Length: 267
Image (tube, rainbow, N blue to C red; front, side, top):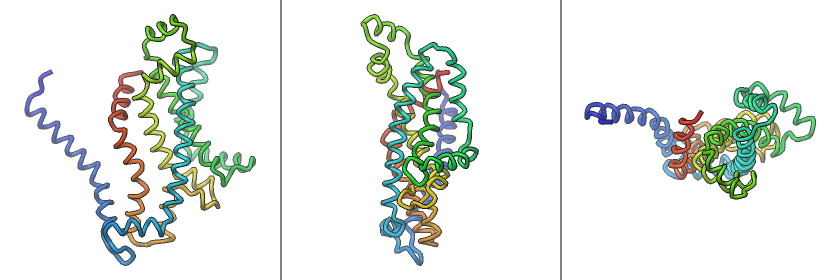
């Protein structure tokens, strides 16, 4: 399709406008993190001050452990569930799938209070599992929905050829379909990591008194109130907390965009 010069120019203008709209808040925070005030010396020293005062090393370590566990477990479970719902026929398949979709539609605010008392009854509050397990459940619901679409649209001829060669169901999944699903899996990993990293409500409610299990976003909220009143150190802390997600996205952006575009063409 031939695109005129005026239409191409208009497209660039719109894209530049959206880029400025998206990048302006980020640039504002980074610039604010380099400024000086009564509590901040200014420059890159603000980041070391925020790191030491806010104890972000401990908070980031907890977030990394929780995010890694949630991404790993939920990705494996999503592959298995998506493969079953997308390629197999069994009684109650559609009913079970729609029940799993409730995990996407149900907001965390609606379940966090009864979930807290359930975990308290079995002695899991104030533990690593109280933060990780609810987020695994939420991520598996979306991951199953996401990968079911991929497995449903996967080529039947490839699966039939693998069966004729004597491949088992397990082998077809892990050695034939999973390598083909790499863009969809990378997109799922990036989204799950980002949602888990930014989760605030579940760590706040499930770990009410164990300070060593505070995640980075939770630590940032306490940092702004307990350790500093200045905006420069707060901006530096916010930059530190957001940096791992930005680095992961930049590292995997090509596969992430490919997976999003591929998913947009599937039902």
